[in-house]
Image (cartoon, rainbow, N blue to C red; front, side, top):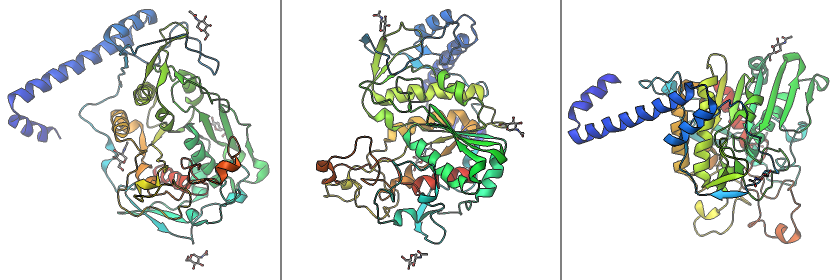
Length: 443
Ligand SMILES: *[C@@H]1O[C@H](CO)[C@@H](O)[C@H](O)[C@H]1NC(C)=O
Ligand SMILES: *[C@@H]1O[C@H](CO)[C@@H](O)[C@H](O)[C@H]1NC(C)=O
Ligand SMILES: *[C@@H]1O[C@H](CO)[C@@H](O)[C@H](O)[C@H]1NC(C)=O
Ligand SMILES: *[C@@H]1O[C@H](CO)[C@@H](O)[C@H](O)[C@H]1NC(C)=O
């Protein structure tokens, strides 16, 4: 690595060299200011310093924590974006070392193979914890091929799902999914995959709450889900009542959620779709209650990813805690993207897309690059479950109209499924089972 660098360097024109020096200097300068902030013990002082540099150190344990946001929080004033960003330092960061995951086969590159002898890995009707939002068969879907597809990497095989072996990996551990409804779907899939071998009296599920817990007594293990759709603290952290007019986030703090996830042994995070709903209001920890700024969704997500990255960098020892990040889940809202000239959505789709590397408009490339950067910086502390490409192919995997809706579909809507369908979430059994199989592969 270093040799390649020095050979290249000698050929670089002077201007580029000077530019790179400048960049390096700037980065060092910024990092040093963050470090100073980080090591300073006076939080008030910290925040003043931070705003001077327009880089804010997130997740500060100030003496008086600002009041938490909830669904009743409001912005009494919304100012222009001040330009503050989240800056963090990874104490173990080794600039010479990239992510160590390169070796081996890329299991995320492959194709879907019809396999009705080994799939589905579980049965919808046999899972007492199925969600009515994902139970497509129960809600009238009759074409069931979507349950029978196996993911086949090009260069190797995925580990075969073995429920007993998975339980052994989970013995005496807490496995926790943290994120939005897509991640909740993956959690339900995991619980359904796992529960079949546990006698009914030896398993339990806590009521739906901010943190919901499935317990298996004999293994002394839990499989949990924490509702945190924006990762950082927000006014949408109530697992049921989060249909609000405006999103307000605290972009520099994951502490509210981290207090719930910090003792889990295996963590699976996601966040994406909630950032695609337009601008978000931000309320810095240092600002007075009710005083907000506004940023675009992707800008908000970058802040949240960095605040999250700061927590991971400073709290995760990869030898003792496994952390996974699930990349964005694609949507299939416009059939013209895979079938030019058509006007529908994913309704009526029965087969995966076969075109290699198909990429739909819902999966934002700049966002993917931003996520790449944050995860790369975290190196071995986080493993990627890169579901985006493989799920892009699965236009057939969504519930469409075969689910229970928040508000029951009106007749008018039922008659136009090509306009009103859920092309965001995924039927279970189905695509999320394979995401879990990938997780199993890496555990
Ligand atoms: C699997 O699919 C094939 C082809 O569609 C069909 O002939 C066969 O009966 C199916 N087998 C099972 C077990 O459903
Ligand atoms: C159960 O698991 C927890 C960790 O989640 C561990 O601290 C505890 O000792 C275990 N209990 C038994 C009886 O093994
Ligand atoms: C801002 O709104 C909050 C309610 O969200 C209220 O408690 C607070 O007093 C308001 N502050 C000002 C300065 O109006
Ligand atoms: C995920 O895979 C896509 C290609 O399918 C790639 O562009 C992206 O960089 C990957 N993201 C991560 C975080 O590995």
